[in-house]
Length: 216
Image 1 (tube, rainbow, N blue to C red):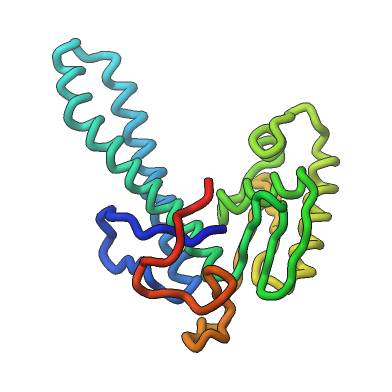
Image 2: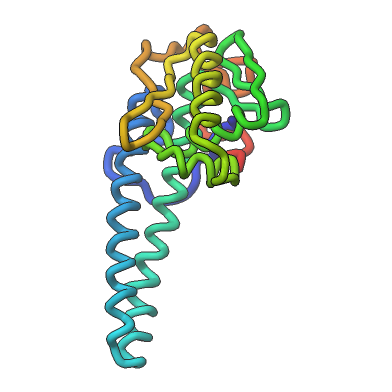
């Protein structure tokens, strides 16, 4: 996963894009997920009420309140994507979309197409739990496959992730589904010997000039 680009978006109080701690990234992922959920709910309620307003009043609200909320949502989603990529960077993990591999320090695992699709989707939602049906439809684009097939691939992917010795694991919660969850690890060193390497050659850069942006 490529180095996240430091955007010009206004940051929240206490938000440090250059943090060296994965727990900070996890914290801000949670913060932005909650804020996005609140704004989406508010926007949905406003749009429902708009249907009962006169055309002139409806246009005025759309031009002011709705537009402002949509702009905030876009900013929050950009920040959430930044912290997703930053988290994996700080955890010392790299995803190669072309080769369908997952790298942790000096270890590399190869994934099948379905395993890779599951990994990428769970990463994009971490640490949120995703239902089996949503994984079938949104990750594999095939809601007709049985959940038993999904469980088989989840088990295979879980075993491969464990083999890396990584600080992430696929968790299962009844009636909630699956999630990739990270656990705390030791702080990152700045002498080039720590677990983080943005390009595989050296320690993290603190000037925001390293990297070419997030992969889609």
